[in-house]
Image 1 (spheres, rainbow, N blue to C red):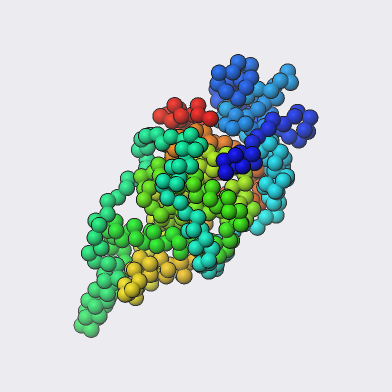
Image 2: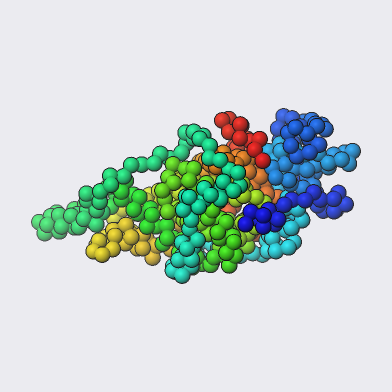
Length: 443
């Protein structure tokens, strides 16, 4: 699989006579060294100063090929320069520069006028069980992912990340007081007091819904929500029919997820068949990337960067926390838990199903706090380093999205739910690599 993948993703240098095959950029660091070859031990050809305008003719790994004034090519790292934003009409020409001319061959060719998945799609789509079963069928375990990593020469590396959520300890026992029993207790007491003329039933029911939940309850609800929401995304757009892509995204994704504080989640990955550029992280480790985004990526490390960002949302419970906040702020309303009976079904499963039936998967297009997105970018860099890859791969991905264009229809939903690309790149530059500097020389 690796040979086939890299045969598709190899970035051959483009000839200067290619006309539009040049992408404007500007030096973004105080200075940037230009090398004769895309490696640090090659001779230095020049040192460029901040704000120097340059033109990129190709991307090779985590290097950009520049055309110098003398006509000879030179190479800088992907974070030495900042790619210029482009309008929608220029997006494909820019991507041909960063993708070795492949953008016109079934790769990112549907950017103009593409209709992405919007909130109404995710709110109304029903769960597609057959597609969900197919997605789960591609799931791989940690040992399979580790074997794939060994084939690529990736070695797991211990890198401390202070911002990562710690793995909470479960009790190992069923919740002492399931949420359903809390509600039933509130109703019973409320009914009794109501018969005495005291109108507190609603308040007690509300208190039961917002009472702190145990780690067992949180984890159970989170894991139950994953397939319910992912299945509805698949109801809006099915899995891409490329079996190799489905296997590949699971191998890379599971390897990256193994480097997090929550490797035991039922990590499941899929590629959905839509040309827009986006990704979705449902609670509990269900992650979907679009075909348009998958085809935009040039290497395993770029794919790992995208998946690492989404994996962080699951590790940090970002979307689940939004759902829980909705539950709390909707106090007094029957959001999901009322009338739930455990019976032969779990309380968490009933909770997840009723939430999804009421709201669909619209939560997946809810804008998270900007700090959550910046944190997910930072986490992706750490996960890349831990997975034996280069943290600069995330920078390369964000540069590709920039090249696609600030008005690109394929990025419409991503722009609605994420901070501006320039802001994300700025935050990475301001934060610096720090402890990750050691791993930024990996190829």
